Every structure is written in structure tokens, then in C-alpha cells.
Amino acid sequence: MLKGNALVGQSGGPTAVINSTLAGVIEASRRSKRISRLFGMRFGIEGVLGNHLLDLNDYDRAATRKLQFTPSSGLGSSRLKLQEQHFEPILKLLKKYNIRYFFMIGGNDTMDTIHRVVEFANNSGYEMVGVGVSKTVDNDLFGTDHTPGYPSAARYVALSVQQGGRLARDMQRVDQFVVFQTVGRSAGWLPAAAACAKKNAADPPHIILMPEVAFDRGRFLAAVESAQKRFGFVSIVCGEGITNADGSPVSASGTQDRFGNVEFGAMGGTSAAMMLHRMISNEFGWRGEFQVTESLQMCAADRAVKLDINEAFGCGKEAVRLAEQGTTGVMVTIDRTSKRGEQYSCSFGTIPLSEVANAERPLPAGFITKDGMSVTQAFLEYANPLIGELPEFFDLNLRKARP
Image 1 (spheres, rainbow, N blue to C red):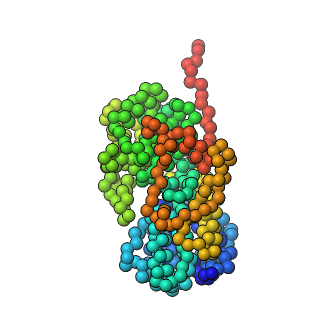
Image 2: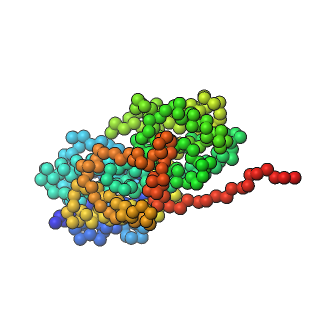
Image 3: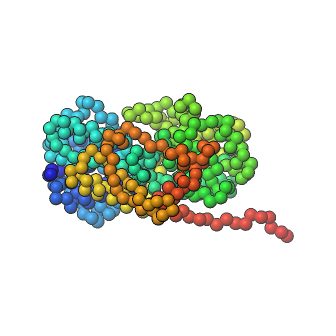
């Protein structure tokens, strides 16, 4: 079995619990008999290329406990796409620091990075083990029930729509509609989560637009008009990546990142929520609001779910355990062990990095209603245990008083 040092990094957008996973890696590495020292990449793989590693060996349990509840990415993140010329310098630094265990916390692009780096090292005669830990608020990683970070971001969305929707309801004589936009490039897991706070038909949201369903302007405006007539206002939730039938983004964004992904909030471009707002105002002459919180869904520690924090920490520890026993080329997964109707429970599993790297997991068709503008009971049963109990507010009796 290998003995040597370990390297850990964070990549891509953060989550409210990504540092909890890092804390798990630190805690397990500190107790490991096979890992002598743990280093952290400053700004992801860019820290390796720039020879900027951090010493993570002096943090005790009290420190990692605080780290568990700290938002954003403590090591700093990166979205650098590896090119062929990067691998030799990376291997040179790995050898310099005697790195035999390689951990990265991120999404599918990050899993691709681990896979390629470890494969290059092993093919070059340098033995190394690589294990990935899933992270993304989008919840679109293949092979896992859910990703660490999704439950907390989903709760953020549900609470925001629940409370912002009440504001819209009570201000309907001023603003007839509100549009809340979630992050999530091509998956509807986050906008769908808004429905978890809905108890009655009048409760927000009234319309949910998900990237899995092609946007139809006529059907959308008809639904908006119907909801406004019925409830006096209309609450709409949309994913940032919703597209027209021809595949063009509703946001009209043409900017792409280094991985070729459309950047919906980049360069001051028009968001999907802004476009929907303009569409409704032009059609009906109504005044309304659009709410685009962007990355706040990814770092709101005050709304983090305890279950999410604990699972993220456990995933970090599991990654080290797997690596110690020689398991490599895998991502740690969360596998739901409870059946429908049972109290939620889960265990950890694995999936090959090669299967995760360039795959996506959209919201299943069975989670979307036939009209494409809401979610089914099956989704609520999936998401509610992850989000946790939401507040119930008091409603005044609004019937007219008698003299």
C-alpha cells in the first residue's frame, strides 16, 4: 500500500457546505497512517501549476469544526480547463511534494480533472491514487442520489420564493407579478425546489420553468394571465438556463466559459428573469419584479441544512478511507437507502470518474408535471427530506368586517 503525502483542492462554484467536505478530508488525513502530510491547492489546479500549496497539517478538530460551518471555498477555487501542456508541470510538482493521494471537491469538470491527472501520472510510472468528492448546487452529477450542497441551496430557493411570494401577494395592487431566478445551467433541480414550500394552490410559486422543458412563449403568457386572474398576482420561478425550442437561451446570453458552458450572468448580460419580466410587462402592461440572487444560493451558510453539512463532512472522510485502501479513479456518492414513505437514510458508495466526468443528470420526467410548469408529488417526496422542515406563517382573515 502507498505511503506519502496528500493533496486536496476545491474547484468550480462553491456551496454552503464545500468547506465541510474539506474539513472531512483534513480530519481523516490527520488520523491516517498512510498519509504523512496534507497539502491544499490554492485556487484549485492553478495552485499546482503555480506551485502555491498550503500546509493543512496543523488544524485540530476544533479548527475543522469551525471550517465545517464556514461558507464559500476556503482554499479558493478555479475553472481552469487543463490542456496537454499542463500535465508535465503538474507531475513535476506532485513528485516534488511526494503526493501519492489526490483529492478534489467539485462537479463533473472537476471529476474530469482528477481522472486525467491521475491517469497521466500512472501512465508515466508515478503511482498515485485519486478520489473525487461531488459538489454542486445544481444537483446534476451522474451516479449519486444528490450532491452535497444541493439540500442547502434548495432550502435557500424554497425560503426565498416562500417569503418573496408573500411579499408579492401583499403588494399585488402595486406589482402584479414576481420572477425569481435560480442558478443551474441545464438542470431543473433548484427551480423545482421552490415547490417544497407550497401548501395550497394560491401559495407561490404558480409557475416553475425548468431547463428540461422547452420554453413556449404563448403557453407561458397564457399561464401567467390565468394565475393572475385567479390569485391577484403571479409568482414565477425559472432556472437560469431555460431555452427556447430551438435551443437558444431565453436569456439571450452568448458568453461561454473555458469549458464551453454558457455563462448566463456574465458580462452584464440579460438574465432569463429579466427577459420574462419584459415579456410580461409588454404583453399585459403590468408592473412587476425580477429577483436574481446569482451566487448567494451557493454560499448562504445561514440557510445551510444540518443534514447537508454532516453528509458533506462524511463524504470527505469517506474519500480518504477509500484512498487508504487503494481505491482510485472514483467519486464518492450518496446512496439513498430508505424506500418511499420511510424515514430518510443514506450510505456512501462510489462511481468511476470516467462515468461522471462528462455526464449530466437532468430532472427526471417523472418529477415534472404534464404541463411542464410544476413538479409532481414524487419530486416533493425526494426533496423534502433533504431540505428539512420549512416555517409556517400566519395568515390574517381577509374577509370584510361587518359594521
